[in-house]
Image (cartoon, rainbow, N blue to C red):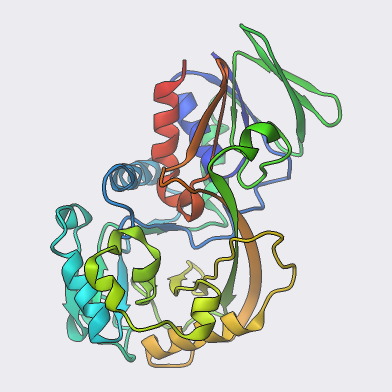
Length: 371
């Protein structure tokens, strides 16, 4: 089967890999020279620890396995099974973590509650003000700036894979036995099946479908610093992450003290990852009501920089880059919006901030279900 695949982000790229594994031919189209949206404006986190119990957790564990397989196939892709530490600064946050350990799937997540000394044995850079941590060794990271390039270089070794960047598909036509994608400059690509991975673009193709879909767009702000002169051996989250991720929805969550005003106003948590070059990627904020602002607000950056500095017990390096991003999020609790538009056209979007975490498992499920 020849499949036209639209979208060069992490969802589209992992679909290309699965299609080739299944023996299909792939024509992969991307409107930009390379992916420039949510797939590269993120932490590179493969975040099992915070996933919702049930189907979502199972998918994240499967995706984590697949990321391990991909890293063995493509050693040029920088993958680190570095785990994560969610740091508690008060007794209320510790109670939430303790209650989480009693969940039926706590062992599946491999959670452990550590005191400060145990935390520092795993990540000696954490010399600051906190009491304990929730350790999840299943969590991992990839490098957003290189992961897609590394995977695509591998895909290009397969003669059944064609990569076409700078191709903006503006129209799709289909019949019972074929489908055609027409680019802005009039070029026509014809195949047996079409998979659309539009990211947060809910308007360019099949707008009427996405208008009624249970999805929304989410705006965020992030930053990176100059290199830190020591190694962060894990990814880091603060106690506000307990409020944000569904895995931590336990009764004692309601007993957490109120967030700081800036954090509550901007729906914030701290996530921090050290990149291969030593720089720190830090975020993030969340805005759900469109139209989104075009100005980057400085207050959240200063707040997150201070929170991270407090946990490390030292002032972080200066902020060198600030950016915003928009991703597509499913609103009904599902993993993604996988939409059968016709017998030979399917769209996949809406994984939210879980794109890197879930992409390989989402792609595997799509290919299994292709008619």
